[in-house]
Image (cartoon, rainbow, N blue to C red; front, side, top):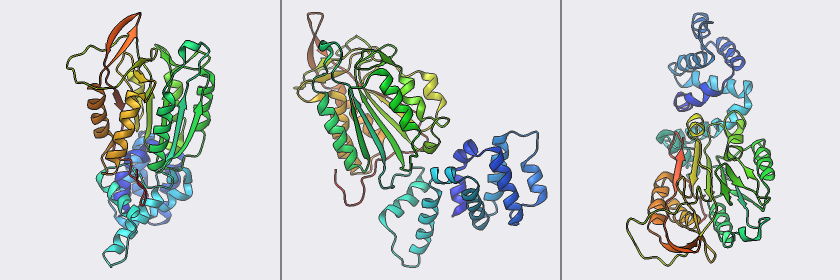
Length: 377
């Protein structure tokens, strides 16, 4: 039902409808005899805020049922086509219509069935073709030869394979300076993202202020992430933005609490800045996964790539086939990585190598990387 769509998208609509669009919709709905003059006066009281006007409009229409809600969505498409498309309202309406047709014996495509189920269960939509864009940045060759990141090419190959299998368009970038990383993210944020999700994977050295470019200058983490928030990237409003960051966050090695044998070897990168808490708390629909906790090394093998990316790709492959949500997958990754062990040489001392990744998220719904029909991971 269209009224159910209004209910499910209420938060996004309240956040994103401008005052001008709200007033236009009120006028349209009066002309369509959905709202009365007295109702519009109550909705648009000058003492109320823009968000209150939006809530009043949505709630007043929603309680009137399916037909009134459909009219509001039709007018929204005319008044704010970008917002209408960003929230994938057309696909949601088609899925609902197909669902109604099912009761009459008509066939419903699998992706349409999933879209309807996702809306009902509070899942992010994940059925567009392609699913979205996955950007991979790998810095390997640095100005100082000793900073060469051997084995990082395995991470790129694994990530590219997994996200192509999951239905994403994958674009890779090698050996970028700090300014080039910042510029690249800004450019991507200005694109019209029509898919259901945006993924960015960054693999590099770092320091306490951010990510290190091959020029050995620093690109702050906020310059990688903030271009995609709701203010700077309207086409990703309400959609999940996922960042996988493979790099160290300090120069300490985590202590060994419980030992389990593993044949992985490790090579420490440099330091990596933590994600500021206030940034994570301020924006919705972000998942930022750090390869290690604050203050510690992230480990990488010259022969097989980083511990974190190797485990992430393995479990994404295995669990996405079973429609497992990403937070449960990341819990499995944490367990897997935390049990690995290796030896590294730091300051001419042999040290036991241990680590555990750390996700930060402001997701509002369940995120499942659904494998496209007919495609196998």
